[in-house]
Image (cartoon, rainbow, N blue to C red; front, side, top):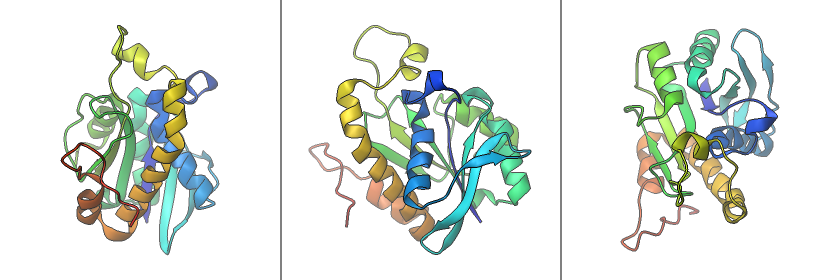
Length: 199
């Protein structure tokens, strides 16, 4: 069984905020692959079981708030007996320009409190994570306020295409594995334009 979990904060006040792009990714996967999400007893999450192509997957959205994501992930891993090699976390990243994707098989928190909570809870960092760039603010605003704010009108115009790429990246990870997916989605051209991975 494969687990794809998107990080975010529950509640209407955080809906569609930059920090919730992990939630948006899981919602897009849920819609495309027709995997309904509902309360999952004992895991502090919304989750759903289904298939991506012919692979059995669980989609999940922890409802513990970002900084306590590890509580939910630990219970999800335990309940469904998920090996860390079959876990993908989708989250936002301030240090990547808006819309850029970067997937890795393991690593540090990169300052992301959701990832820190997960690593602290399970005691390991050997799980895949897909970071979705939200960019840094171009005006004077605290980082904490920026990530919790809504996307600008201009950014909202590009979100649909970005989430389509996120879905394709997750699908590639499920079917092709981390190395092939990194080769496709982490590569940029010399001009800085994202490589076309629609092939």
